[in-house]
Amino acid sequence: MPTALVSVYDKSGVADLGAALAERGWTVVSTGGTARELRTAGVEVVGVSDLTGFPEILGGRVKTLHPKVHAGLLARRSVASDQQELEELGIAPIDLVAVNLYPFRETIAQPSTTLAQALAQIDIGGPTMLRAAAKNHDFVWPVCDPADYAAVIEAIDSAEQAGELRRHLAAKVFLHTANYDAAIARYLDAQTRPSAAGELPAEMLSSLVRVQELRYGENPDQAAAFYREASTNTWGIPGLRQLQGKALSYNNILDIDGALGAAAPFLGGAAAACVIVKHTTPCGLAVGRSVTQAFTKARACDPISAFGSTIVFNQPVTEDAAEAMSDLFIECLVAPGYADEALRLLQKKKNLRVLVPPEGAELGERRGHLGAGVEFRGVTGGVLLQTPAHPVNLDGFREAAEVTVPTARQPGDGDWADIAFAWAAAQGVKSNAIVLAADGATIGIGAGQMSRVDSVRLAVRKAGDANLEVGGSILSSDAFFPFRDGIDAAAAAGVQTVVQPGGSIRDEEVIAAADEHGMTMVLTGRRLFRH
Image 1: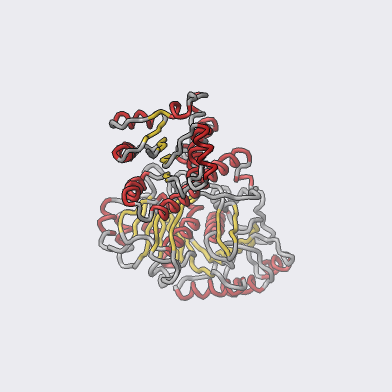
Image 2 (image 1 turned 90 degrees about the vertical axis):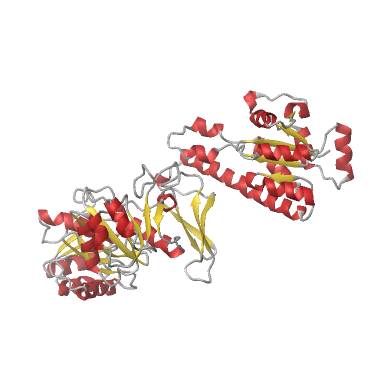
């Protein structure tokens, strides 16, 4: 008579599994709450203590860690000496293990979880049994997912392709336990070396779960899927709730990521802000008295590139704002909320993807123990890791110790808000990044050029294409000027103020050029590269 050992935390479907096995003449061995669940369903159960001849001890911490369990799992049916030892020791083979684990990841996803509570949810016996069954899968069914119960019963009945299914289940077990251990390792590591300290580990384990399959990647001949970090509460893009529109594509997700990053300095601010992104970099960014005004100003920066864009607002979308967007083709729209009438207007754009953060969450909020941990970026043959960039602090920009003004011409009191805005706007633009700004709005953006002076020229040209006046504007640069040519080009276009990190070996030459042109220059001491 074959034997199954069933011990599960997630009890969905377990009564049906137990009943199906019992009907087929199997002996069902179980523990604690699972045994009670099966007996309530009318399934005859042998307690694990009856199998081992040893009681559960240490408050249930030791139940299945016993030779009669693990010898029964690991004995090879095709090896005569294994079978002889089992017979001599009075140990019965175990032919199926159905186990799922304590909810460690779900527990640590709750911000209030203590270390003691987390440690209590580290399963020891479950992974040990699963790994033993998976190692011996030629003879034992290793089952860690309730979704597989029906397929296992069907395969037991038919005996067709049983070996192939057991091998698939074994692979699933090792992936499951590896991810489980990865979550534990990352959590415990974060307790002693917080990611905020900027230190990255010598070895890195990541536990990922698939959010959705994607039709294709950047191009139709590339397969793709979207995953999230399993060890954290769902936040960021995986946490967004889609209200309407087609499924998100690979490129949509990248654009939303770029837009949220560009909007980060403005989230939670008093002023309404709008970011318009095309191919992961802003083509317009503005603040205003209302979301409608912010959108109108942002769109004016580059109305041609705004076609087919992704847009993020830091405040709920009003009916007026939805009306203002009605003539523009938009791929994705993200905001903390939408007025009812705004949603009715947006529903006329059936393919428009409208997204909102989950109830009770802030847009862009990083939650969970590791939610603000590490950014991953794949490269050929490897992975790059870095801690996330801190959003530019708009409110405290002028008072920051690193901010200095080395030029003779100083900013007026009324200039600092626009200087801070221009600096924050550069954070979301791809390097080499140059942003021209005036009156709380970008008026020209030069992104992704191989030389900084070309980015200056591009930003000036884009402002001209949009019929926006460069004279008197502020120019921000994500990194230092290596030569004075960028300052000369900006001055020729009428720029009056430059904000940049400084740090070039030619800083004196660059500052002298600004003085020569009667410009103001603000040095921030911080680089904002976005490659």
